[in-house]
Length: 168
Image (cartoon, helix red, strand yellow):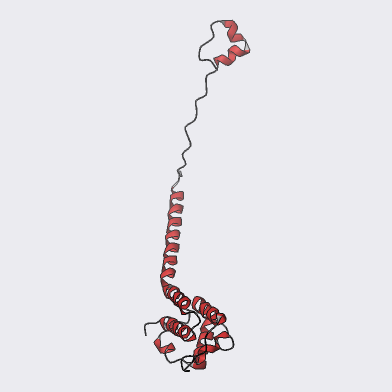
């Protein structure tokens, strides 16, 4: 479009002349992406608080389960040594449930405890039966992949809700 006004009246009478007389419409100001009300700021603050609370819970759970990660590393290093696997399980149980509840357990009582806290019958009737007397025999039976799997599962999923804590 042209910015020059028509030079004669004939140009103003024609359609092209009239179009040339039109003035360009100015561009509107850009729309701001910032919220215009305080409600959005409050909502963003609440959302930020919820995110910080969730991050704190994840951090706390991560640190609370450090003993599990350490026990799983020790279990990987133990291989199929049933005595070492039993020792690792006992250390985890002492950490979580405390000395008063765990230290005196052996034999069938130890297996019953593992089943009760692990939620199953895999120690008394499954692959975990090997652990009942492994600490008391001169040449203990070696563990197998099933025992390692059962021990790993117990370490990862034992019930902490009934735990009294390991500081007693």
